[in-house]
Length: 546
Image (cartoon, rainbow, N blue to C red; front, top):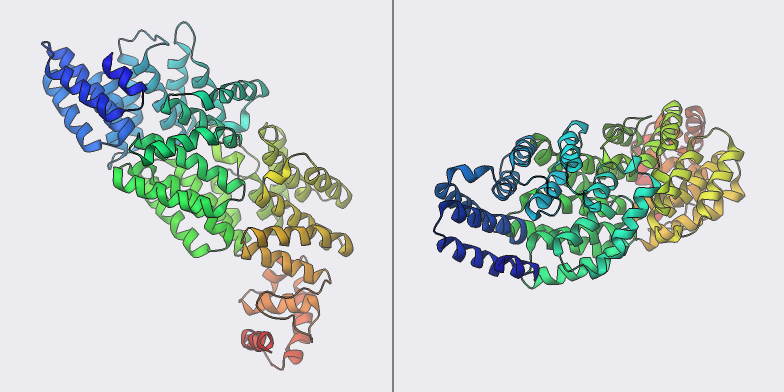
């Protein structure tokens, strides 16, 4: 009881010391083993003392070889497995076995059982496979007198957000309301995790910052890491990219110093989102590769999905929509939102955009139909914006597309999501320009350009800039003046061709035929004083320097 009171105050080191002292004074081997296992659990769960936790577990097993199946022993052992070379399937099997064989009687007030079930929830989400969830729901359904609401709500909003109902979201909001007053660091992070996919992390920022400050002063490392992740993701979606990068670096340092290697991919992901969105695609792809190479052999599919998300954004920044489609289709195949693939609720706009830009219109339409059968648009104003934008992109009817874009962009609260808002505005401007509504396309394109420049997102800014030129607006290039001799569309075609794109690829980006591209190039070469495509890059450089 003394150790529990100390732990409730947030002093995990003192709690471990109290437990080990109590173990030393225990006359019975079973009591000694139980207290050592509790100390090992606190060490692994709270402060990242993984080496010490391993030694304490060994002492517990020596004191009572039959104690290895206890919930505290099993949860600590699973932490050690995940942070070493062990895989997720092994960790899941160990924890499920301990829960099913435990003597807890499925008492909903049992702290060890509650902690074990929250950790099993994490493993199920990491695995992103439907079959992992059956033992979790079976155990939760047996809790008496009733399951704690957070165990049920988090399983839905974090594990399978695309299929969450409105009643669950109301329950989540009620739980979040109490987070700012919550003294338990573990519960603060668990509430933040439940709030992640429904875009409610802003509501737990204050509590998350409290944990980060505690962590910086020697508080629980794992809670410090969890709170950092939530702040990074909220920063990214809210356009605070510099802070997101700073906190990502802090998270990577914490993982390296504490031994929590299983959490490293969190911050590779948040760093990858920012670098991909800014157009530093080489760094973004390197981070995604590191995530995949670590997570795939261990069966941590959620990390692989996050890596694919980074690759998708990097591909789109590079204008490689075919590669983007392949990567996003690996997460959520066109026309489906697979159960317990949480990331499907965050990448549907990317899939539809990539499908439309690569003339996969049937796949885009199928994905929009599948989207309508989910509650993704009801999760948050950000996802509602993107859902309406995806439908506007996929429809063949220009009038309906214009109406959907207008509805999306005039919905309340969309200004909270600057990058997503700018992307939808860019898509609207591109669609208007393609339908020859050149005058109408300029306002959304200009707004998108301004937002991308404010976010320091040069890759997307240049895309908006080129669309404005193609719409007939003379706009200075950030690195030099627009060529006087070329028309706006000729300039755009020349720049694309200079990067090595084929006529067909240029045509896909500009929504014109490849024959039109060839005809424009025939006019461009003499204007620039060259005879072939291979001289385009140098000619454009000379032009910019004049």
